[in-house]
Image (tube, rainbow, N blue to C red):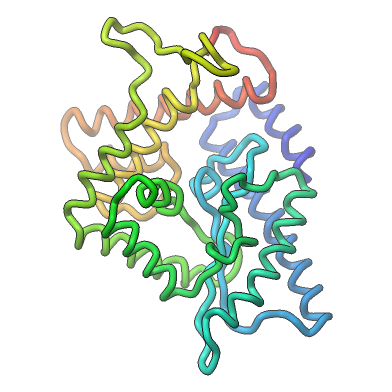
Length: 293
């Protein structure tokens, strides 16, 4: 599946298909793969008499959550389940962790690497009930320190993929409401977004990497895409825009909400981000570019 999807992506990029359409198609393919994996595991567990009871929802996080996962990258997912009367969340979690482990294993075989940080539905920490997820977000929002802000930047971009989407929508509404009950949070959230410097120096020169495997090269993800992505996230939550969560679409919605130069800047940011995505995909697929990025 993933090999065929990558070949389709390669063809789209060669034919200069609009990135908005490319992201939609590739996200649908990724979602279909996850749905197929989950369906297979569900039947397997049912045949063993071990399928967890109750409603649940598989969540995509990070770039996958934003429908921007085009290249083969590691997994970022989690699982949200409904608490069950007469059972503790720990008892229910143990059953869903097994489901998550099996799905993650299938996705690995399909070409998606495991997350080095363990942010997957196979990790008990990221398999939680509605109440537990709310407590996690409350902690991250109420204590905006570096680790908590890191989690916020990843988990604030969650979206439902398979299962009962209503559980995810209710959680997202809670998070949006909660950040506005903690007005001081946005100051820390914005400072976190500014942690990645713009790609230009004081003298308007491109910032190149000073060390590592990519020394003297321009890191398009860290220097260009991440600052825009982080800015879109902060502004979207500030303006209570919980959908869409795709970065260019967030900027397009913001261009209709904001006024004056901010509206124009948002439109330009949407176009710039899509251009950077195209450049990065071309490099990732080793198609070559007309310039050095």
